[in-house]
Image (tube, rainbow, N blue to C red):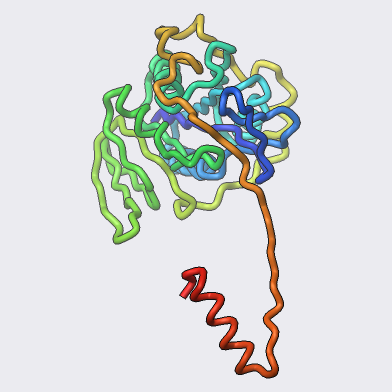
Length: 263
């Protein structure tokens, strides 16, 4: 079984900075990690490989520094890693990003299953995975909390706010993973050494390698435009409720809470 896993390198911090001109995140100087849901997706792929054999290929779209995330994925057990990177891709929204990643997957080819994380913590859109499935014209199952392979089909438990759904789907299929699915493994020491010992562990795809329309990618080719963005101002206010006794203080507190429609 051939499995492709899409991962994203995201900022490992809540103190994000935003480019006010482009509305995009400023990533320079910010520690980065593999997006948490994407790690669950990778672990699911590795578990299926452990059970049934096959190959796990990991792809990521991002700047050159995203190689670090791919090296970590290799250290966890991936067989092959690809970085999709080019200045022409900069500023791509979810539609443009999915366009590029789908083109890269078609170029890599030969897959039975594609895994993505439910959503990235730096965007929270949960759109890229489903859009990739649409561009590739394959079935998709989102919010997977369990997966079982049976012959040429997968049995997937899909979690929703109301109840869980049991879904049977044929191959190929795209699945998005949630944290309930598993506990990601730690990389093995030998694999960590191998991930950093060889330069060719991470292979690279650029715009020249992919049949994508340049008018449909990057900031200018993205149909979604950021009207405005800002980092919320964190403010704390406190007030001491005065009163002759506890009863009077409680009454004044209730009055204040009612005045701001808390109760």
